[in-house]
Length: 223
Image: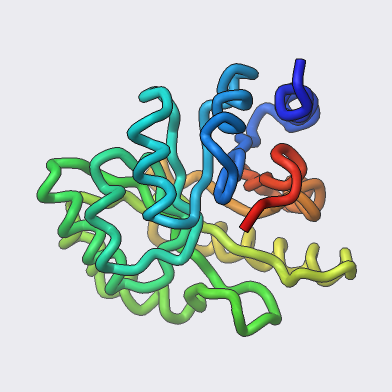
């Protein structure tokens, strides 16, 4: 058994039943994804449309592709035919564009609202106020081809575990607030996507349901 398969198996044993592993395969070759697939992994995360599209064409069709990067509106149409979940929706404008392209393909596409929880300005994401603005106005009711299934966020890249924990607690609080206010009767609104290779154990303790792990599985990326 190879290194990648070893890592997949050990993570599957380690992760609680309620937490799903998104193997972040961006910048890694198709043969590495195949190795993880052969170990039973089915959910893979990519962040570049131009990289995801050929991988989806060449690799097994039962893979669930998650888009986890910053999504440009002019690239949406290329992934809509097959993407399972878009983690990184950081504006209502983007939701409208995803809905428009999904309607053309007669699909309902699952999305997570990305929130800015880190202290770093380089991270994208909504504030709770911005999300409240379009949710309270009922604007989602006009978008019949998307489904908001939860939230996503990235903690500050820091060795300070207390800060990382505080940011994850904040994202879970945002999830709970939105669930109670807007999605209480929606069983599909259930995901908190937080935690990567360096901080996923803290994220799980704070309520993550999806961890996005790349370098711990595939090694350091070749950019």
